[in-house]
Image (tube, rainbow, N blue to C red):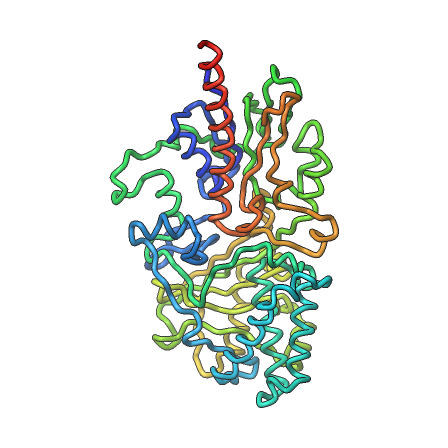
Length: 481
């Protein structure tokens, strides 16, 4: 009899696991999804003249990337430069010369090229960058650029990496932990043209006409709006795992695959599992980091910016920042930059991180819009910034089904020796058979925070079960000889 498998979460990891199982002949599985859609932190919606990715947006690198490989096979992605027109503007409207901005950014970015120094460093990534920056100033490497601009660019650099790592502060980020992440990205972004990141889900489910394959009917296996509140896992192999949802529904299974975000695990793991999780697992959940970044989307009737304009990085002057911090708009300090989205000529997207992102999520919509217009009109003094046609925003922290954007390695991760491999370890019964498994980007040791990490983890756990029952079947055959 085929084992009954329950997958919690229909994000990238859950869909990857389900399609792998289906392709191998397994049909006795169910996916429980708390939202009313598939995708998890992949969330593509129709918007403006095209689509908009509220979650995962770019494919990170074309090297050793399963997402890129699957998409490129059907010519679904393209590269876009993000440095050709690097624009940084100060809060008085002054633009930093492009050659100066690029020189400072290149110098700071190359600071982590010395991996041995980074590996041996005992402080935070923020401390590491600060020390490097001060050394550069003291040794005259930036002596031909005025000091105020250097400090403003350094402040932007830190904000950019707060956003990139989805953290409140780089002083929380582990410096040597940065080396755990395999980053093959070059100076370009890879976008999905007019399709959006949800296309990767279509590829996994074989739903593209280009694939010429029989689609996998996952809708027959998914129950939406099912929030799991408890997973009761037995040590006795004769007793099934009992999964209870908030609506009182109960599901029994031989194996349960947990793919919820690290943020959800952090919030409810003490009540979600019976018995309580082993200390190693708790240590991994509490030690690994997940933070908040959000997108704020302004749609205009038509662009008020030049055709070749891609957006700008925000540089606050000290006197303007001091004034801002004494107002109700102080949350806009967390805005790092604005970008024009490829294939969406009328959209301007602001990126915000950390505590200010969480503040923004809780604001009434009109207050959020007014904050954005305040920033745009203050920095873009040479343009007439009109009222937007529409406004939309993400709320990754406020949504109880996510509680954050994606994971990273923090100083606390180092202190607790928290590892993705510990988070990925299955819970087993007394025969050593996995009964509760874990997948998701946070469980990947090198591609955490990415969709390729999530998909790989889903395949990993599906393969764990496939291998288990393949061996079991082989042993049964051998015993009959």
